[in-house]
Length: 191
Length: 191
Image (cartoon, rainbow over all chains, first blue to last red; front, side, top):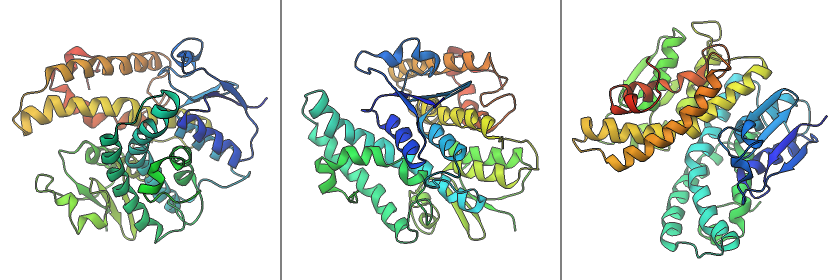
């Protein structure tokens, strides 16, 4: 039986796991949740992710949540398939871990705020973005991407010279921001 | 030569790495930075952590930052020493990764806000905590710790039946909060 991924195609965190499955060429069953009605905050889903957030992963007895823990499991469980996505050598794994944590702690909070202002508000909530918040957050994103540019002048990808989870974890929010003014204001590379 | 850890004993993130070194019984050289004068935002430190945050780890050519990436490296580099801190079996490693990410994304943002209000403001900045923020954040911490209680009714530690980085990463902020009203209001276990 294929593993199940519970989530929403609107959710950046869910899409991280979806991209990991695709990169590893692993079949999975997608179980969509209606975030608008708060399906993720109620049973039976709460038993799969007690924080009421998407996604959750289920394969037999194994139940995982937190998107980056799921992508790591998918990458290590299917080491021989598709794109590598992780290093096994500790000296290469360590810088990859650094840049995975940079994505989670330096990039993602800024990108998520911009996705909310630039995509969720206008296209889903039918509200106007707060231009002051957008301007301030663009500045913060620019500072993070300056560090990325310096890093990428020394290695081909963030985690090293191969495409890894450190890069992959950025894709869903970058995809959202591509269609917004953030693409023009910042240094987001074309994808 | 022992690895160097740059940071501040006031910094929760620095202390995560310090505790990891101690649990693994690994000697290290501590290089203190003066956060009050912004030493972490200037060269030469910026070359070690381009985000201008502490800590940074240097061992020969290897330069790491992001505290949790550092603790992971310390744990895997010294597998045979001191406390285990990590699982090597993938089926055990996956839930440990989940709870490491829970610490980073569900617990830490709430705990850090409380440390700022309850410890940094009164003891370092000589300011009064914002009681409304403390009250609201206690509620959020309580919700996270309710999930922890359910988890800890099924496994001895957060990451499984052994003490791992998933637990260790909580220690510095819990140590700060022990001396505050947060200990009485929430379900923080005595340490």
